[in-house]
Picture 1 (cartoon, helix red, strand yellow):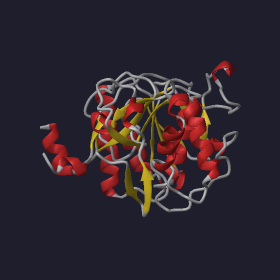
Picture 2 (cartoon, helix red, strand yellow):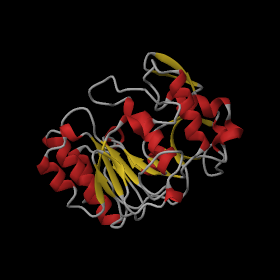
Picture 3 (cartoon, helix red, strand yellow):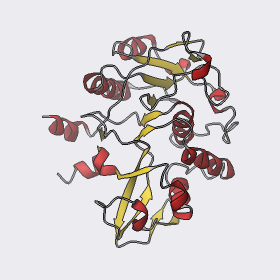
Picture 4 (cartoon, helix red, strand yellow):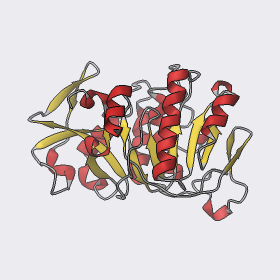
Length: 281
């Protein structure tokens, strides 16, 4: 029944897992009243307790229409069912979140609206970068990397749907494998793929080269060095606006041994079913 529902609604499917954290927000920024100073990391005041158990979802830019509102509710319903004690931080803008939608979203356990502030980027290589497109599609790549580096946890795109618990592996970065390919055409450019032998997982085919993906990013530990390197490359390529796949792919391809211990590469289809895949079932 669940998979039939996914095919009909054409949602992205995601499996997840995480845990707790009592949190309150105020005045549009992260504020944790009971947060000890020792839990505040990377010179940022306030915020979730840094832990891989945080969950982040983002919707900024355009006001959610009826379809998006229902989509967000389905995502949060799945999280509350499979992980009823997980802290979920819904990053949005006050100007686009209606009172009625906020009431519906916060009806789910441990869901906390957090209003976007550019101060989230303070003290990082991407400080000062601003969203240029109204739907935040590209800028969401900046946000996901920053919040996971700063506070740790999992970032889930707003059009995903939870259908089971996440794998418990740490620092999971999804990949898309391309059997028999060395390069692919990506956004009017040629993207060299990463040698499949760098997957460091005996169950994965070393002959299949791959590219990195940015959804979902699972169970990241705060301060992960790979995320910091990702932000540095974003800062060097501020005009590219293609930060979510080309940059992490290039980092892994250029420095595979250096980051092997900081990320766990898992094929994306192990973690979610995308509508493009679902049409073939």
